[in-house]
Amino acid sequence: MGAGRGWGGVLHAPCLQPPRFKKLGFDSVNVYARASGESEWHFLARDTNSPYDDHRELAKPGTPEVREYRLIGVLKDQESGTPSDSTSVTFSG
Image (tube, rainbow, N blue to C red; front, side, top):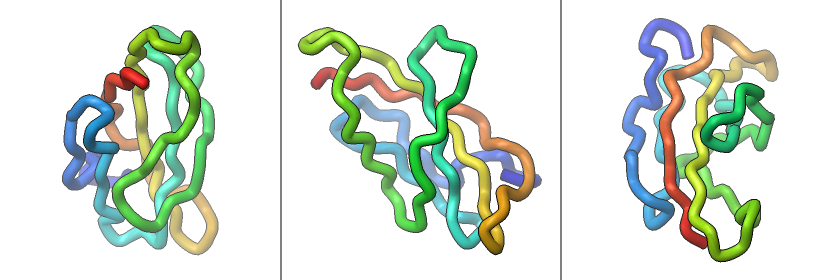
């Protein structure tokens, strides 16, 4: 996300608190995620308000999983800058 590359206020917390962010001058952010250990990032949503709520089901019901997230700033409907650093959140279902 440009020079800062950070989430601007991300909380590293288990699923009780979803990932929070500040747009840092962008119109919105594109949210990407992957399961811990995966190499490919998957687009989830374009978001304009923090926090981002991930409502996807667990891969294995009842089994906690770690999901990684990163953001890319969006300005005038175009991704801009570099992806943010990633952050991990544990979901327990």
